[in-house]
Length: 362
Image 1: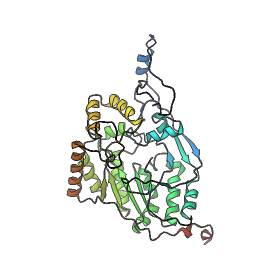
Image 2: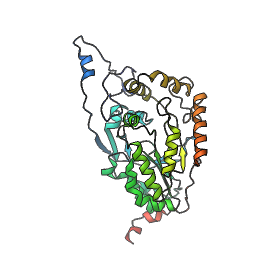
Image 3: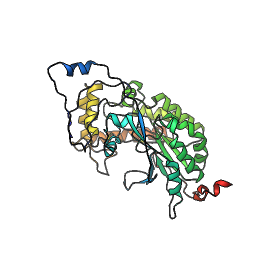
Image 4: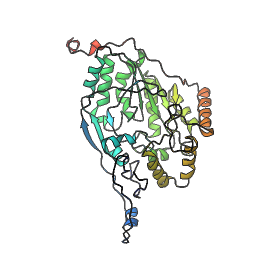
């Protein structure tokens, strides 16, 4: 795989403007000046934003399991592969390589939806010996990205979990979660649900290029307020922290607390595999004056590399800059009265019999 990217102009409404080669490709493409000025002309042309396409897959399982010691959940559920939000920093982008698709533009335009996921989930919950543990929804790609409005895979899965009284937690940037308050509020009152809304920055201009199709910052704060007023336990994620870009962590925490968030967490930016060259390209397009400084500080937190996958440090980083972020977060949370421990869910209510076909007759 090459780090040399074909230079193109930024695409309106898209986080990445090129098809980043994935790490399993055997061929490379490089920009070449043929002497006719086509390279410069291509830079000047206005590139239309590509349309989003959705294909279906039939999942064999709904619940994923991880053994990572630095993740606060055992079970996950993700209705979609790829994410239309187009966040340039998304650590899930390299997962599209396994589909023989680009982690760049393909990740946010060529999406995969999991057909019949709720039915598969119901069968898994009814398996003999299944032990309930809260399921984290949307931990890889956002379960409330725009296509959820039509496909409703996330809502169908929440409905299954609600019937079985199975605990869940959601992390999202999408205001679409408000649609499902009718399901989440009763579960929240029973200690079965929590929602964490990611607010990366309050700077609308920065958010527009960093997370082009996610809800605007002020809209996410409105979502926090709507969830809190409905009685749904709600927290805020101020992730990822990117040196010299989103430096308003304290202001985000204050605004989210005022809107009703009671818990908070953060992570620093992660740049695994193909994501590092893509993020560099984005920096050169949108903030070339800071590109070198941003990458230097990221490397300071990763032992001199773009990324360190060590379980003990990958979420928070190491070194003086990581320590500074940790101190800022801790002090802001203490001042604002946030809880920073993980929310305990009630597994004792789990009732898989409620999902049986016979139970549906009554």
